[in-house]
Length: 247
Image 1 (cartoon, one colour):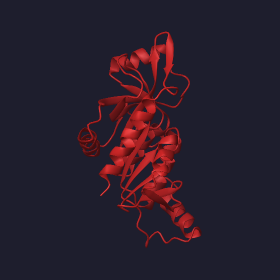
Image 2 (cartoon, one colour):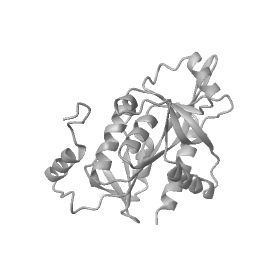
Image 3 (tube, rainbow, N blue to C red):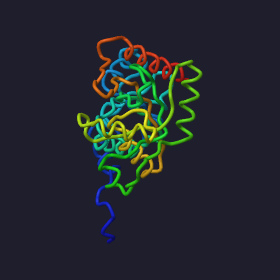
């Protein structure tokens, strides 16, 4: 046996977990597209009563009432966790993964509540290397990102599109790193993008990410946005956009 062959198969475990919950993976309809929503973004979607919890897959997988081929779930935090979650979802049959999360703004012109659509992430993680993707940038899926961009522009939402930085250390962004990634053109920093995009590439699926700027890095300050309404407004716009797109 090749020493590099993985001994594990996520579909084998997912099959057992679903069976234990009373589901036959070969007979149920898992959504093709799933939105992985961070923390209170997920809570806001649930509060809209637009879907129902259906399957214990990658967490609690909800299905939209108007289209059972599209679902949403609370996204896990950090690249290793969301990578494992993505493995489970893909093993269950999901083909498209869209992360909606929070990020720290790197470029000085970014403001709290700004929305960023990513073309991929500068890789500052371990999980990509372990999957054989030890590259400087792990790209999101261009066609899916273009589709989401069309949704955003149709909803008349202001946004920026470009690359960002994924780190494994959420409280260790240094001023030197911020300057370096600014020079590379990174718009923001978060902890999940590389993990998600690595698995999508590895499993021949597609993924992209939308980020709300929740804080901004300045030379002499860390500006937080949780006390105002800018973040809440941006989250509401994204939730409205997703719901409106469900047909």
